[in-house]
Length: 97
Image 1 (cartoon, rainbow, N blue to C red):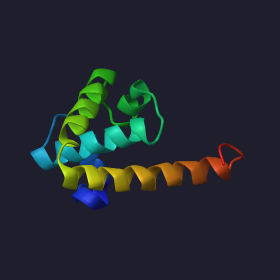
Image 2: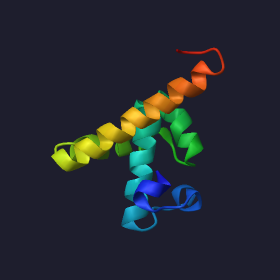
Image 3: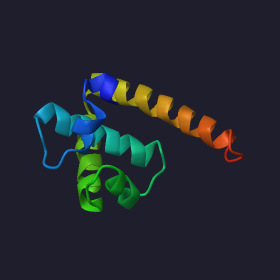
Image 4: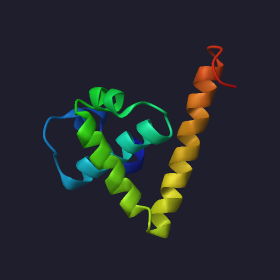
């Protein structure tokens, strides 16, 4: 996600919101971890040093923005890529195929 939005992993985990672009990149990343990665919101929150309610809010923000066709297309591509990578990772360990 850092590559798409030019945000470093450090910036993604900083306390506080940070700049608007960092907060939005974090919200998209949390959404993808939950929706495409299949992680529970509590786990996503732990990974991003946030709580579950922050993850829920991030998911709502991203869902609301998906009314924009260009943003929706970007999200669809990111979801596809993430889902494929998760399946590949799990498949290499004997998980989902």
